[in-house]
Length: 113
Image (tube, rainbow, N blue to C red):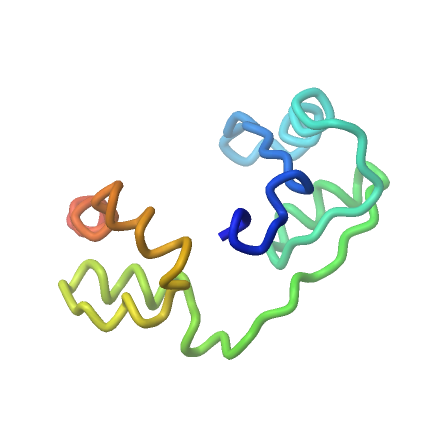
């Protein structure tokens, strides 16, 4: 999707290890693994609190029709084998990737555990 929107050069992915809820350690990992930044975008309250504690300005990401375009709902549809989930993701960039990695089967196996 980033390629389609010509944003690949504007995004950097940083792998931050899971700390099992230790917020101080998580923030330290973020600062260690990611380049310097002043603003972060999230709707996750844990992430917000950790970053604000470290002095980072945190803004919400805009949500569009959350009841329909919900990751939780899409994963539930995938787990049930309901193919309608496919119409809820971007067909150009996202759907081919999800198909290539066999996401529906992976989600179904995770939800069974």
